[in-house]
Image 1 (cartoon, rainbow, N blue to C red):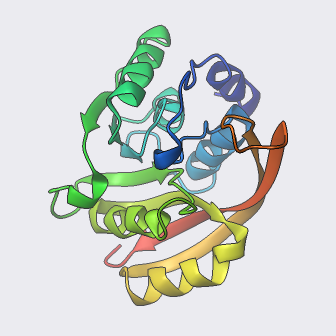
Image 2 (image 1 turned 45 degrees about the horizontal axis):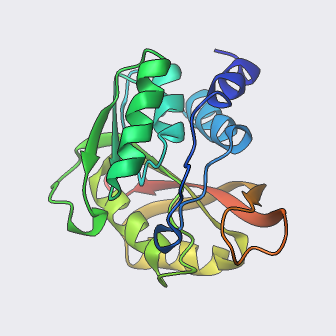
Length: 208
């Protein structure tokens, strides 16, 4: 599948109607999502015929992108039942198979390398400090091949140091810096849209 076609299909997905600020629910736009998964597959071979988990799947954008690129099996995990409903509807609309698990990732009981690749756009940690790193810690425990994740560029040094020193990552590489458009979703947003600089990371767990 070509990048433009992937981005176009992701652009049809239903998004949050009532996002929850405490969960930092922001949609992952089709531009970023398509490039993230396209890079994972075409540069590293981490998607097609792989078992992929979408952490904090929200409306399912990253997981469904993986399914469109030929992942063998995709699992979306989210703490929010409403998000899983929307993601499930999106999967049906695209006629794709994707399994969903409602859970708090911090309590995920999986042990060992359950999946090949984890993809995620975690909370940036502005509401609950360290939320993004909680996601990364769990992802590196269960991925056998790679973890792809978005983190604010301002946290780059901290993310790299923590992943390598504390989370058992063999490597932590910023693939590119992207502009993340945060739409005016919440009352405290003064501007129609805010640009945040984010890094697209690829982490490889130790033992690979």
